[in-house]
Image 1 (cartoon, rainbow, N blue to C red):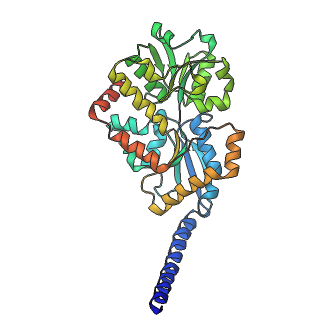
Image 2: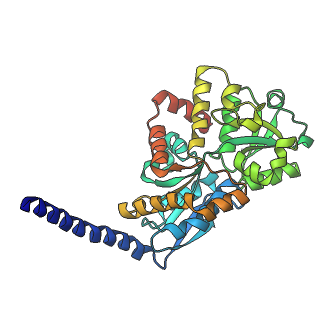
Image 3: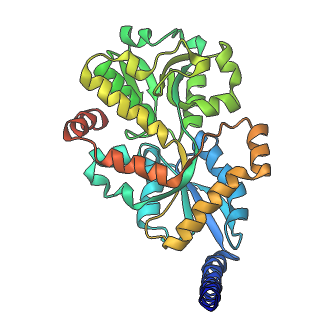
Length: 341
């Protein structure tokens, strides 16, 4: 009996020693963030899906981070989303005070372009807000009725830079699906591209996100716009007659490339932080992200704004990055031909 009491006492002492250590760890993170302003860098212009979801996280995430820092969203468009990525990787403090809503094709683009000087595996994701299906949109006044028109004549497509999704999709379809897209670059994001479509400067917005369509232009799904293709692993239920990019191509290489492109949707609209963030802060940020998803006010806001939410933990998004960086050499070479054309 005396031995049992001794064991109970020992366990109690151990627990009493661990509890302050855990509290001190939490307090250390809280002390760091208390009174600070965290900046969430959005890699594209205002109004697009990166901006919508980035600002959603900026609005609600801070209340769940120990110390409750203020989070401010900052737009940093340029280089097809890679200006912001370069800034987060090379310039921003690597201490957990900078977050990002950046290009979902980060890993794929850096894999095939060594000149970017970025290892995406050094970034850490807090979590994903939604998987992202991109669609190509034309207005009825363009005379375009389906993807088949792009096989018959040259059609102009708006894009940010050569590394932006709209440009990548167009080059891939030109290479493997017989389309004749002419890519016009220089736009800051999909909002500006869509304005160009409506003005008649270009005919197609080749990389609009489906969640953005559901929020800003739900009438497009009722015949107010023409959808040429969708970049997803399968057809979205409300676009059942619109082919996926994989369906449009023939040949094993083309289908392989299109599956990789569709896989970028798994990263979707995620929130990342810089390399080098201390482990305890990264863990706190990831815990805060998961708590935000359960926040009744967050849920109410997404419903009011009609924002799709299909979350995934940061560790899962990190795994997608690692898998992409480990693609077989033949797949990388095929992607390089498309991305660097």
